[in-house]
Image (tube, rainbow, N blue to C red; front, side, top):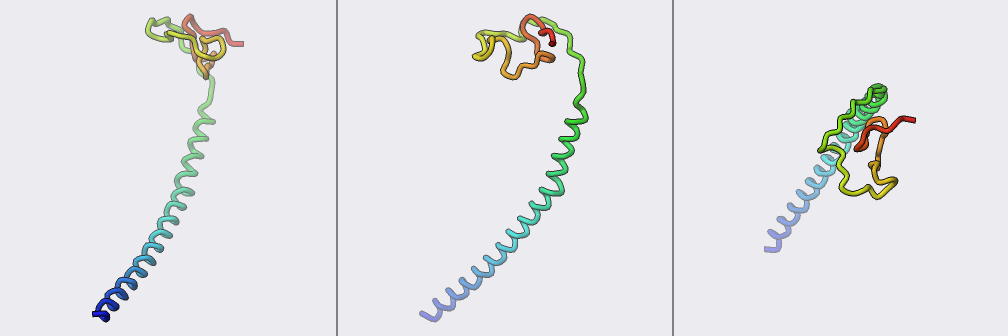
Length: 104
C-alpha cells in the first residue's frame, strides 16, 4: 500500500512541476505580448492624439448668446470667487446668465 501511495504522489509531484514550468512559459509569453502591444499600439496612439490636439487647436468664433430660461440657472452661488463663475470658467466660451464677459 505504501508503494502505491509513493508512486501516486511522485506522479503528482512530477506533473505539478511540468504544469508550473508551462505556466511560467505562458506568463513570459503574456508579458512579451503586452510589452509589444504597449510600444507598438499604445504609444503611437497617444502620440497621434497629442498631434491631433496640437494641430486642431485654432481660434473659433464665439457662439451668439441667447438667454434661454433653462440655461445658466443659479439656485445658489458657487463657493469660490464672486459666486457667478464656474470653477473652470473661460470668458471666451462660457457665458454668464446675463451674457458674455468682455475679453481683456
